[in-house]
Structure formats: C-alpha cells, structure tokens
Length: 231
Length: 231
DNA sequence: GTCTATAGATTGATAGAC
DNA sequence: GTCTATCAATCTATAGAC
Image (cartoon, rainbow over all chains, first blue to last red; front, side, top):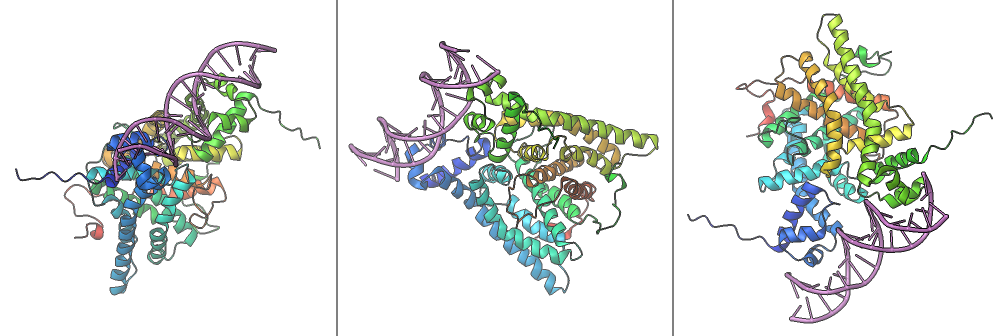
C-alpha cells in the first residue's frame, strides 16, 4: 500500500477540529477548555495561547465554515439572477432557495466535520448567549438579504413583509434539518435517519419552495382555510 | 378603584415564573440558582428545598406548559378526525396541522409567560444537554405520533417516510417561529416583529400546510425541478 | 510553543440554626 | 419554610519555567 497517512495537522487546526466536534456534541457552554485540550492532545494553556480566549475560539470555529458557505451562497444567487436576466425572465424561487440552501449541506472537508458543523449551525439562531448568536446573525445577514432581494424579483406579487417572514420560516426548517442530519438529536424511531446530505437537501428544498409559494390573502379577504378560525 | 391587586403567588409559583423568564432570556446553563432566587425574591436554599435540584426545576418549568399544550393538541386532532369521519371524508391536512400548532401559541396565562415559554420551547430540540432535550422529546412524542397517524389518513398517497420527515420540517418551522415571536433573538431589521400570536399562527400554518403538500416524485422519476442538480 | 501550577471567580447543593 | 454559612467542584485565564 502506497497510501500515506495524512500528516498530523498542526496544533491550531487540531484544536479547531476537536472544538467543532465537542461543541456539536455538548454545546459551547458545557464544553470546557480543559476537556477540549485533552481531547485534542494539546495542553490547556495552548488553547488560550493560540486563540486568546474561549469566546475567540468559538468565533473561529464558526467563521471557518460560515465564511466559505456564505461566499458560495452569494455567488450562486448572483448566478441564478444573471442566468434569468440573460433569458429575459424572472429568477425562479426554487433556484434561489437552492442556491442558498445547498452550500450549507455541501461543504468541503471531511464528512464528520460537515455534520458536526451542521449541528452547531442548527443551534445558532436560538443560542441563548447573545454574543455567540450575533456572530451567526451578522455572518448570515449579507447572503440572507441578497436572497430576500432576489426573491422579491421571483415573487413580485407577494407583500414584502410576508415574503421576509416566510423566508425566516424557511430558515427555521433549514436549521432544524441541519440539527437532525448530524448528531442524533432525536431517537431514530421519531426521525428516520437520512442516508445522505444530498437527499436531505432535496427534502428540504421541496418543502420550503412550496411553503414560500403558498397562497396568501390580501387584507379584508376571507381566510382561504375556513377552519382556521374555529368559532 | 376597587381593583384588587392579585395576591402575591406562593413561593413555588414565584420561582417557576422567574425561572421561566430567566431560562428564556439566558438559557438553562447560564441561569444560576443564585441569580434566579434573587430575582424571585426568595432565598437560594429555598429553590432546592422546593424542587430538589436545578434539573428538577427545569423539568417542572417545561412540564407546567407542555402538559396542557399537548393535551389540547391530542383533543383537537381527535376532534378533527371525528368531524371528518362524521362527514364520511378524510381529515384535511390543514386542519390537523392547525390542531397541532395552535395550542402552542394560545396558552392560558399571562402574555409574558406565553412568550417566554415559546422561546424555551424553540430551543428544545437543539438543546445540547440530552437530559433536558429528552424531557421535551418524550412529552411531545404522543401528540406528534398522533398527528403523524392522522396525516397518513389526510395524505394517503405520500410515502410514510417522506411524510414523517416533512412533519419534522414543519416542526422546525414552528420551533423557529416560537423563538422569533418572543424574546428578540434577531434584530428587528432582519425580522419584522409580529403584532400578535394569532397572525403568527396563520403565517406558520399557511407555510407548513403548503410545504407538507408539496409535490414529490417517486423512484426513477426525473426531478421536478430541473435546476436541482446543477451539473 | 509547550508545559506546570495556580489564581480568582462562580457554580450546585447542603448542613444546621431559627 | 426560611435563613446564613459554607463545602467541594468546576471553570477561564494567566504567570512563569523551560
């Protein structure tokens, strides 16, 4: 066998990899620097030497994945827009949503790294620590707002506020999906494990594309669903 | 004025109310018994005297709201089923989803208590502490499985696995929605605040009902959305 | 860069007086 | 039931030798 084992990554990368895994499995707060360093095979003081503080380490763990994902999102949304403009038509909502969702499930790197980060990202919006939550929110804001603008072109008849709120519901499905397809947050009888991340993407895309295009009623119209307001 | 101020609730209830608020605002882990007791105007030792431990207190906070919500869910799903059977037709997916969703947004009690609990519930599925997460999962399982069975009647052509997975995406939207409509997890420019919980329910119901009924392809069929697999 | 040792703060839980 | 006082464990961060 001429397969050489990959060289042991440097300390900084080892810390980031282990931090990603432990943060996914036990959360930020419950993962102490001490156990993290032990699992990475480095000294406890080395973590603060390389990253300055636990908060800074958390930020690096997030940025390492979110940066590339969000750059891809922006590129692909722009590509969908250009493609539609070339053909003289509006962009399709499905294509835009796919451009936003797919990069999160198609990261480079090991499968493990992927799935661990999906768990972390799934917790992001509801993270109780505002400082951590803000890291995510600020990073996802540019591609999200770009998606919003492009979706206005795709669905010009939908009121802006409704569109924006529905986009948040789509993000909610995506986050939930992210959490489900990695660390087993739910028992298998409750959520049948999905074989691969690609079919997860399809599952999600069908759902949110349909949800985004749901009929909506204008003011003073009777509800579409009669049973909605049970007397 | 003959309006009598409501009598100060007893110690146990005061602790539960304050715990609910602080757990929503700062999370379980970051809320210490000490600050909790201080905010409730009770002694620190009183918390452990009344509840035994922090974990037991968390469980009580969750059960106090989830119990009534889930009982309502079961009642309303059964009612939809009976109503449909009486008319000799299948239950409607919208009605079943409404039966599951509405009780969460229509709790009894103060508006504050409502919204604080919505934040807590929104974090439930992605909670890093498995013990806490399990409390939620076990409590929501009965109404969720009942919803699943009833939805099989409503959408008999959909493969079971797909139906189950889509139901999870619906739950994901709901959870996200719960988090958003209470404590401001996101800045208002990113998510326009919703005036009332009822319109939040409508927003959510339109979205998930449409998502659940999205077209799906059988095996060996070409994808509905051509752009889904960009070469 | 890596290590040991420890400071300094906070935590959950409890013992025991009243 | 309510209080004070405290224990034992845990945490982040850092000082200082090598």
